[in-house]
Amino acid sequence: MRPKAVTLTAHELELMKIVWRRDDPFTVREIYEELREQRPIAYTTVMTNLKTLEQKGYLKSTQQDRAHVYRPARPKQQVMREMVRDFVTRVFNGSGRPLVLHLLEEEHLSEADLRDIARMMGKKR
Image (cartoon, rainbow, N blue to C red):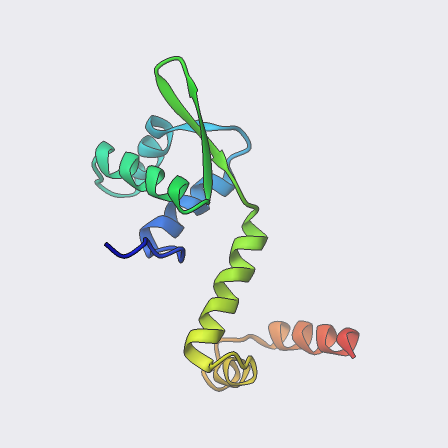
């Protein structure tokens, strides 16, 4: 059997975004209730996904009474940086230049975004 991928799936990233918004540790039930407000989902699906995220190293859990209490194992910025690095490596063979060119060509950036990027590039020099 091949090992589980460390990269986050779309559903796992959705869960992690909820986790990172929270200040306190949480139970499966709390995440389930929050997700259920957005779309139908089974409690067991949430439980399985949280266990998978723990196995992948994104969450830590402790036993409290009869429930598992989870908390993030790694900060959001660190995970996002790793995800972008992985994407650039897989899609653009490790070069960030084609990614930036693609973003500029697709016109997803506002004038304010472009000014901010230019200012950041000036600071990097």
